Image (cartoon, rainbow, N blue to C red; front, side, top):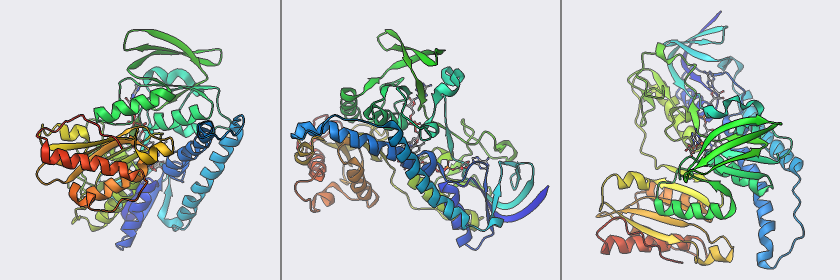
Length: 477
Ligand SMILES: Cc1cc2nc3c(=O)[nH]c(=O)nc-3n(C[C@H](O)[C@H](O)[C@H](O)COP(=O)(O)OP(=O)(O)OC[C@H]3O[C@@H](n4cnc5c(N)ncnc54)[C@H](O)[C@@H]3O)c2cc1C
Ligand SMILES: NC(=O)c1ccc[n+]([C@@H]2O[C@H](COP(=O)([O-])OP(=O)(O)OC[C@H]3O[C@@H](n4cnc5c(N)ncnc54)[C@H](O)[C@@H]3O)[C@@H](O)[C@H]2O)c1
């Protein structure tokens, strides 16, 4: 058994772990990285990048399908599944290659391979070959897709996102279980690429939206295009002749049995904590077995253990994994005197069509503060000029503003170019801008951002005229 003593040990070489390692080194500490799985990060290997590659192919198909509405007739659409998946894999490998190049540049002595688990709060066992004694430890172990119990016996007929991006060809049919972010992005992309897809949600929720008006609008858009079965429970799933017979029950009690080539489990992700032997750290753990921690410092209690990225389930998106990693690595180096980070606005984007985005405080959070505390401004994209020009006039945006101060508190939207609107809204939120501040800024014409201006004007009107928070009106253009 080898023994190693270091200042900072980082468990997990994903986005958060790499950022933590670099931040600790920057503070002059002797830091090491420990990885039990493949290098390359979830984002590049099986997450952000390959999913967007698949979506890009689906968008290309959709543009062709939509072309006749503009008087443009491109001829019959043919989708070559092998070519689609070959490009996804090749480009994915290229992105992974960049990460691997970065890992290669880290001194070999700073990289340990093997699964890490705690022996005590300052010691780790790596595989069966090394013991690491560390002044501070950063947990950056990410999360893994959950497979609902009723699907676990299906063997290779139940797949998760990781499997999709290794396909050689597109399957004939897929039942997607889960209407969260992964289910919606991958389900819609596969549907657009000619796969027979049904998407099953056990509630009426879509992609974490909490605003009932935006949710209703988004549901209408997706239901128009997709075989979307909300409020539907999986009763059972049986293997029959190399297919899965999926038995479902919808809210009205009606039952169906349908056959699919594959089931895609998109039912959320679990933190990779189960095999860390966290019971040996003495840390307080929450119901999911995650150490309780201070989000301003990433420190677990007053220990020398820090936690960053998807593993803490707080904000499981890429930019947060990076920033949390930096904070955790820096504060591990500064331990016992960690520094608190400034508040960062929450912000997420779903790359479906229409795109979905949530910024700042959600409708649900604000609503729980009681009526009359916030005003809502809304716009429907149906008659919004530029959206209509592009034939992407679907969805709704609602912005939330604080009564009294007029500050922008948050927004939820489903609509065209939401990825760009979301950035404007996130930056305004982070800068603590008021609705008046935002309306004083220039808006070009004709752009989708003019839709945002309509919502802001509506919010301004509500702030000055309305007394209650939840006026469900939606104004056009
Ligand atoms: C399909 C999909 C699409 C996504 N798309 C987007 C997107 O478009 N935009 C966005 O912002 N986010 C997206 N995300 C989320 C984003 O990928 C994650 O937030 C981010 O990759 C998390 O990084 P991380 O460092 O926390 O975890 P990871 O990159 O998963 O790193 C954790 C590492 O820890 C290792 N590990 C685990 N346990 C141990 C152990 N005990 N010992 C040693 N090593 C261990 C793992 O092998 C892994 O390498 C997507 C996710 C998925 C699944
Ligand atoms: N564009 C992006 O930024 C992006 C893309 C993909 C994933 N991600 C990240 O990955 C995380 C995980 O995504 P996800 O879609 O797996 O999780 P999610 O939490 O968004 O959705 C999970 C869905 O599965 C459903 N579900 C849970 N258990 C179920 C069961 N037993 N049967 C049926 N349905 C069940 C839930 O009701 C929910 O609709 C997201 O939180 C997100 O942060 C981000």
